[in-house]
Length: 249
Image 1 (cartoon, rainbow, N blue to C red):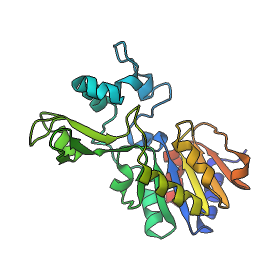
Image 2 (cartoon, one colour):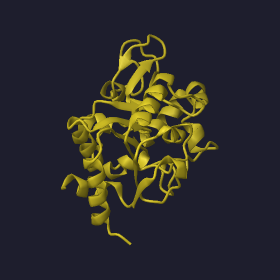
Image 3 (tube, rainbow, N blue to C red):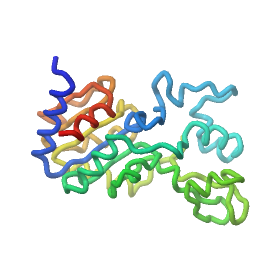
Image 4 (spheres, helix red, strand yellow):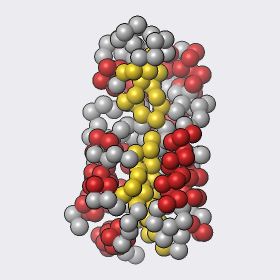
């Protein structure tokens, strides 16, 4: 069995021989930044809400409109991490974009850490905590304004702010879907990181890949359709450590 350093060197060789790289990432990408994932034993959706509702129901469209303060208590506690900083995965991808090799990041995360690291082309499938709009006057609030007291309320009219994130019972933005699929379809190398590929429809987007190489970096093994690529490199390891080593090569 190959050690991590050997696998990372193979990863680097693939990158060096690629001209159109796309990164498809999930919650595991931000775990090294101190943001919990969703579906692991310690993830957000495993939290005991101390209510009759599941975590998924707490962050649903129905809950937002039925009881916004109740929704906000859970949302701001478990989904918003204003002090989180980019980790080696974010910084490496930003550098790769600056070098002209990485053409897009397609992310299921809502934390904005790719942009914080310097990435410019980021397709946020599930939206962002950094964009918030008043349900009454439609005024835009960034995260800093949203967190100011009264938290989650419009600083102009006092109405409730709705985060520009995809809640349960809501669909993905069609334009973001189209651009993500187009980027994946054009890539010669697809990096899949920090995702178990179980969240739909996002996970199905990798089926549009027709390039030469796929690199999977994830703590646990995942299964890919065999027709996707003839060259698949699996790195079953911590994504932060993997990209930390990659940054040094």
